[in-house]
Image (cartoon, rainbow, N blue to C red; front, side, top):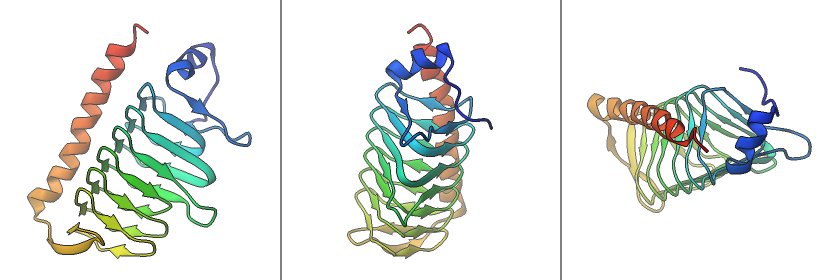
Length: 189
């Protein structure tokens, strides 16, 4: 995966899909990543292959780095940010539901963060886990692997079945296909 190149074609894309530097640091974005119009990707951000950043999402790596894993989807109106001492790492094949906030945390592989849920600084979410819609994973809290956590504050309610864990991966795969379709429909712009 190479760095972002400001070619003439990319400059045209930047007009509708803002990819911006912060203090001279440009995002590093794999070539097949889908960034929807209206989304913002700013600063020290690395986005791996097959990932997608959807409409009006903001990914702002200004005071620490953000890494988004392969085939992860950051859905509409999500906010991803950091603190000076709290970088953000999101694993592979994750789904961040509409309006989720993930701030300076570590999220494992195959995680679903539900719509309007929040995961705060220094929190850790284990792989193969679901954070329910509107849940709050507080600062420095840890959610183990393979569970469902819901509520404010988020509490583990049960283990996830193998089928439920597989559904997380299927959701990520579905968004990869959806991203391809959106990319194709926007080519005429």
